[in-house]
Length: 224
Image (cartoon, rainbow, N blue to C red; front, side, top):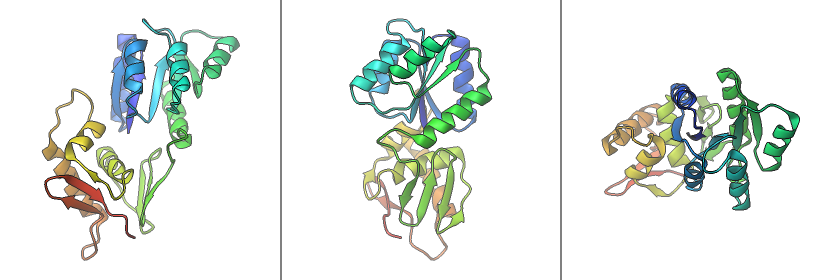
């Protein structure tokens, strides 16, 4: 699950990036509002953590512009300011939640999970393909009512395919969505994770949940 962090304090950026990665998220970062807006427009992120006081464009401007463009990306606003008017302005410009610095990482993570459960208007809080059910906010997976334990990366690969049921998804597309920008990644890694998913998801003599489309990529089977 890919999260965008837009923050200009280097230490806080590093702490958020490392903490979120440890909790299983894929993280992109930007240190100014203009770059953050450009990344948010790509439509690849499930949520944005957005600082208020940013160079080039502030958080209010970034949030307001995204909402004018029709984006439903869940946004958690961070600010060193404190006061009901600042909070009201953040919410009025389209932020979904608001957190004042200094804050507890545990609280931020809980707020982020709540935003992901609610999701944007174009995102379902659950993903169902045949008898496979995914809950991205909690990273729970069930097939045929049976709980299946997945690693964070396995879940991210499976979610990438499950959100495109019946469609061929190239290995490069999975790599781009699941692995961080700048992180060492190779399409062979995708093959490794798909093999691992098949071992966990598919019954010994039953049909495969993920089909290989030779020379093209993978496709999530839509049958039950």
